[in-house]
Length: 182
Length: 182
Image (cartoon, rainbow over all chains, first blue to last red; front, side, top):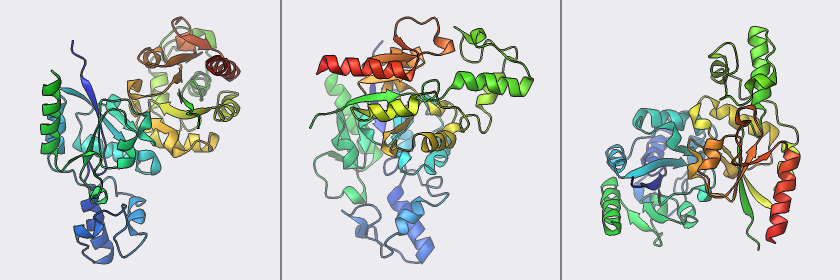
């Protein structure tokens, strides 16, 4: 039996569209439409006139539970599960109130992911996998396998990881990678 | 700077005395004192007259929050943190209701463990560390580093991992291991 390669897939910014959610919640709270471009290249939460707004949203009940799914994520993960072992790996410990919400969100949108394959952690250097898909360079930098950086406003200026801009690109990249190995 | 070796430490049966808790909860529910010996060498939950009792306890609110700490765990973890990187790694995803309870339990008894160093997972083969302390052979069997099996009733007949019977023994073992490396 062939041993499947393992992919560690982040949640926020990769499966869940945190950037879109920030803009929606900001509009709902302050009645101001912030253009996406205003977040480009800035740490998450900066680029908004109200300094603590994003942190307050993140700490609000319901924020993680109501995140929109990034288009193509569900279909691509299902497709990848034919050739890879998929682990969902989220740095959820930073916001412990998010733990049940993140679990419920996965149950709703990715019910085909077994509990065995879900990891809520802090520092991701504890993760042993072949590929890591993440939007945060701090997580990718310490990873010993192949890194794939999912495009997000905050990582706009980062160039030292392979960037993907959609789940269609993830699929193409991983299929090509596996073909070149076989 | 010396890179510290990393220890993945399980919660249930290693930091928390699940065996004692099973007996207490059983007595409180059924008024029957089960001798510890009756659990020896049997999968967790077996050895009790009421077949589903332990599973029902585990699914009850408060079970994980009220677990007693295994004697010496707090002091030894503090001591080990001088020479090792300690990660608490619990297979909490099997019982998602336990997630907030386990987090709160750690906050109460091990407040010196940072959120970065807590992992709630399913399958522990995703964990990258040098040592793993666990009571379940199924977790230790897949681990690539050094395994240490914490004594528990259910693992009484397992002989293929180094057994420790107390946190004092863990400390002795790890100090000796590190001295022989240096």
